[in-house]
Amino acid sequence: EAGVTQSPTHLIKTRGQQATLRCSPISGHTSVYWYQQALGLGLQFLLWYDEGEERNRGNFPPRFSGRQFPNYSSELNVNALELEDSALYLCASSLSAWYGQAFFGQGTRLTVV
Amino acid sequence: EDQVTQSPEALRLQEGESSSLNCSYTVSGLRGLFWYRQDPGKGPEFLFTLYSAGEEKEKERLKATLTKKESFLHITAPKPEDSATYLCAVLLNRDDKIIFGKGTRLHILP
Image (tube, rainbow over all chains, first blue to last red):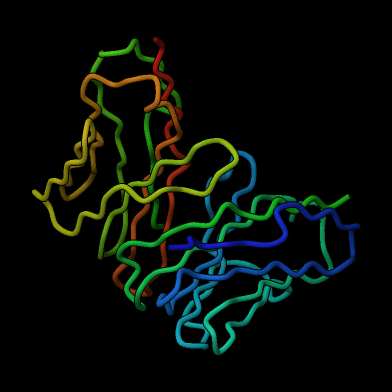
């Protein structure tokens, strides 16, 4: 069974540009979670989607947004990139809206120069 | 303010030397506590979920316990392949938000 897959694995953008990160959950999982893992800060919760709806978001500015598609895959968009947005972005999925046991992808390393 | 603190930040042990990692939390209401293992350059790997004080879960050389204020991850007779960063996270009752600790970097020397 395929795990959570994220693309691209690495992304380099210039300050002010937009970045789009993609996540495919495990088959049958309806919930997708996005996290930012910056150096020295630990994992910070970004967004939670379930059944196509945004259920919750962390303390991030509105330029961090996303969506979940009918096939439960998800996209994270970061607009007006800043140098501090450089981090590993992790996606996780779970069977239902209950976090319970979430499985993580390998992440997308975003570098803003 | 809701907080999750893991200690120590880093721990070096000899192979076979048992120890415990700590995750203490100050939150308004705990719905669940999770332990993950993360290897360099990879996403976290789920280990355990604990829901109530007194609960214990075991997997191979790892055992997780939960009290009203903290959780311990006990590692018995560790092997070099247990070297990783161990992350603790809590799921809040009030708004379903998840807060991660910064992790404990564990290094097991052969």
